[in-house]
Length: 330
Image (cartoon, rainbow, N blue to C red):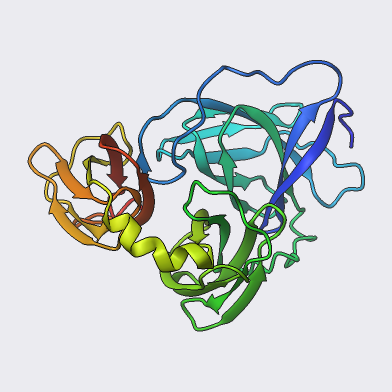
């Protein structure tokens, strides 16, 4: 690599011919750490938000010496929906500060293939992305085709806060009915590409209860799933039902968790015991929902806004924020 101050330690994601890699310096200098807490949630329902910093280096993917590329225009949307733009400097670097979770990136420079990617930024660090020259761009081993999206699935044990599970078999079909198969790696992760829309999933691993579900994959992003150990699954329902209820106060905003509050947002879903709930935000953009503690499923909908479906761990009574993107901007 041309810049010998950096040593690649983690290959994170390959999408549209682009790899995003976390780096650590090996010359004794430290990447800036601002002491901020890690984000609580990498989607649109968040308990707390703290800023993290990403220093992004852009390199030429088709060169033999990983040539750094200045003048690359980079557009970023952080986990809270805040949008930023920047251009790589003479060292091929650009710095962004935002709220932790899954960030969306678009990289553009004349003569190179435009790249789009999602990357999980939970703490301040440096990373590298690769661009291919336009005449070298081609389909990559990740299976990403034009018009498709990629879903990174992290499979946990017991809940979305449980340990990550390797060797989980995932099969199903995308919105066009194209079938897919994948197995989670040693990090409990698998990347699946397909036609955007509602996908069907089957999760299976020996010693765990199999799960089948539907999930809307409209854009490239990261999502979490979990499997119950088979011995616990048979006892799960009665033990969960006996727990005391907790209450979640949800404040729904427009555009980001800093946007104006939205009234009339329909919220439905189910608590950790599978009990279904429905609510509508009041004039203050607020709704209170009670249920059995654990991982809850939520659907948010309001006319003129893009609907959102997500999972969130509600282990105690507290307040959380969600946001919806206007349909014209989504």
